[in-house]
Amino acid sequence: MLTLSAITGYDYDPTAFKRTSEPTDASAHYWLQEGDLLITRSNTPQLVGHAAIYSGEPKQCIYPDLTMRLDVDPKNAKTSFVWYWLQTPLVRDFIERNAKGTSPTMKKISQPIVMNIPFPQHISLERQCEVVESMSHLQANLQEMRDIGRKANAGASAMLPSLLDRAFTGAL
Image 1 (cartoon, one colour):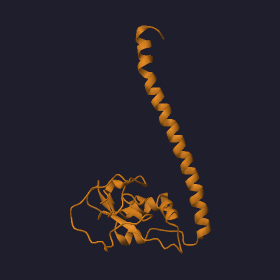
Image 2 (cartoon, helix red, strand yellow):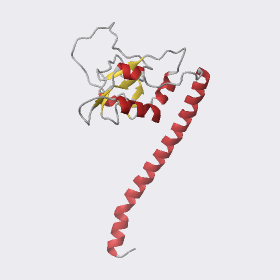
Image 3 (cartoon, helix red, strand yellow):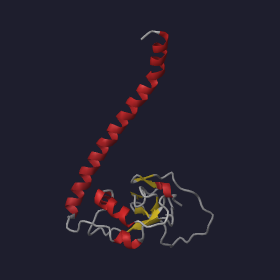
Image 4 (cartoon, helix red, strand yellow):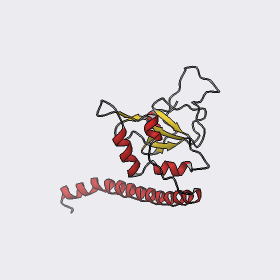
């Protein structure tokens, strides 16, 4: 069974699961299929409504009750387009305004709220594919920049002890 942390920051973490000894039904609706779009229905105000696409790993996996599986009609929308759309400021604002809960640290969204998330109705599948391709390219570039930044930060951190030693021994 996936844990709630399997969907964080719109990324899917296939290692965030736990094994269950509870009985299961092989024909039940709760089994995930590769490519399923999942959305968190309960979390902190910043994380509620985050979505991710199930990669197919681990195999024979169930989604938890704090997550919903969104059925995307392939005749009307691409799952990856919907996933990007769910990250837009318009959708985030809608979710934050409609999430409920008495605790300021834990909010929930219901199926009716998810069903009413604003969605662009007249974007062709062809245009959706173009948007997904463009966003995927931009996301790859951003990841490359993050990796460069991490390496630069690690290099700077590694130099700090030497600089401190030089500063305090008068070698600077």
